[in-house]
Image (cartoon, rainbow, N blue to C red; front, side, top):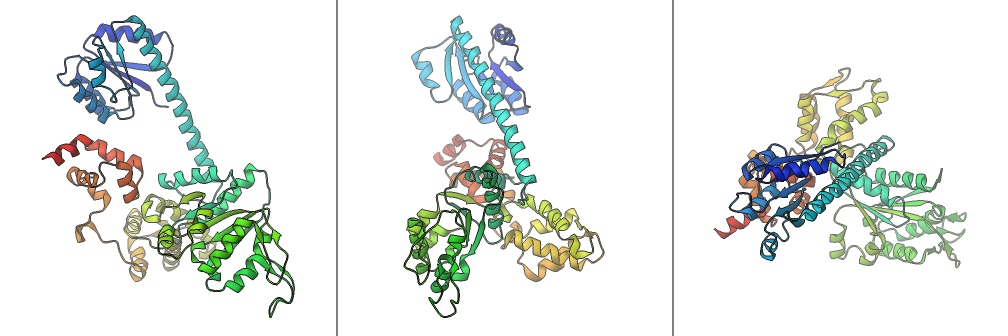
Length: 474
């Protein structure tokens, strides 16, 4: 567990010692470190920014105290900041308003006590957050061990935790993502979690491939809603539809964005009324099922183009899971290769193939348009072509990939640099942040990287909004 550290910036060491002595009476693992000058404080923060609380004397020798507060905030953005000063006038408090948590008059003993209690409260919150973080890590590890989802990507883990929460409800869930990212695997995971929460050992799980019914409305009605004997040529027996079959369980409607407009209307009506009418029957049949829908990314664009009903999207898009493409979670490639190796060993004489670092690097340099499904296909081909060899070299991968895929355009071949190149250059990163008005989350989403990764590079280059404002003013 991380230490809870407090940095007290004050040129009067007696004040720091008194504060340290009082904190020790609480017998808590709180480390209070003193800094006699702004320069010392900056050096300490640059060496280790993991401080939970910063206490700043308003007048400790720095000419620009407000600028100093901005600087320490940049170096240690997550820390709670308090000003403890003899000058507790309305004017001085107004200057730091919005920059710090609170302002204390250190000439008053009761205020010092209040500040100590604030530190203790922050420690308690810190402890809760640490425990919560440990719980999330343990929960994530348990989830990954008990599911078919193979990942170490923060982007994927966020969606997994979201899916686990959603599994506790009966609301419709829409899973979006490109072809081959694992939408059906996620839907099975949600169903398994739901069964666990509600102690259902063998809940029904019905999969409907909506693409199979495109421009075939008669077949859609017969398969989904059922039919009675003699209702059409070939209807030799009465048959239950998939909606009725899945009643009481979970129905996965895969690729619902592939349904025709007529099919969408029929599904919308069924979802609204929670009743179906089998083909050739006058009797409506109620059903009660949980629905999970999958669609490719960009279903909103289909609505704008008039290709998908807005009312239907509103009905199915209650809870949303967005599975990132493989090219946005390249760190998963080694894990997936190990999984495929173990999973396919019986098909290649029990051999488990290992890839060299060079081979994996080559795989990471490709744009996986069909995502995990395509990577699995590539593994199967490479494993077959390498015969008895247990080690897969870069040249083995090249033979398969060059015949079927387009290599990513490298930064040397185009003026449009990859994000890995951009973040290494302060000027380039600054330009990208300016384009997004310093919204780090927005830029991280565009690049498909974690928010923490973006924050790391911004902090490393010491970029602040003030840098952008000053460059715009020139």
